[in-house]
Image (cartoon, rainbow, N blue to C red; front, top):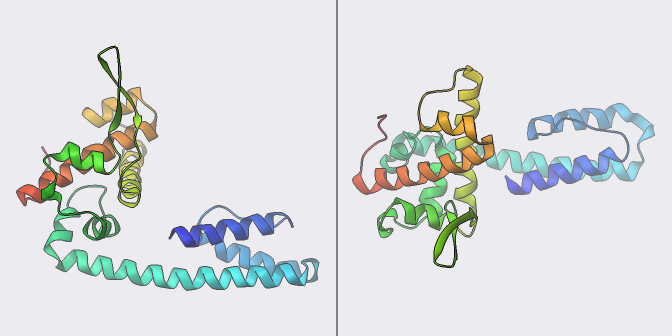
Length: 208
């Protein structure tokens, strides 16, 4: 998916120099393709050729991505471990598959905080004069899983904000005080700790 995004950004950058623009997102590549055809002879042949090369590569990657997503969705319904992870709101088949593929056995971590620290989701510890202080997120851990957890957390926050009424709980109070991205990282931290507890205790997610 990262490779496809890079190709899309490169295509958008090249075409923007010739006045061809489209909204951001993989679903809008077809709009760029249609715009290239509509330009006719106004677009230099070499630009049209290079754009076609990019579009072919993007389509090929899209087919591969869709196939992998379908396999993950199927596995999340049949594999007990993946199905358990997907019971946590904000965790889908892709995130569950990334945890299964890239994370070590979660039971090797002594607690949920250590697992969150391995993902780079805990603040850096800064000390001065014997007084501990918390800094920004370390980002020193597993980048793929961390990014997917933050995306899942942000999707939960967007769903809450679309409803209009902020819930009277930890997340709702945090959203009233902090920007959405800060709240998303904090929620991703909590999700990582919850996932650790679910795996260690072998329990599905349950609302309090």
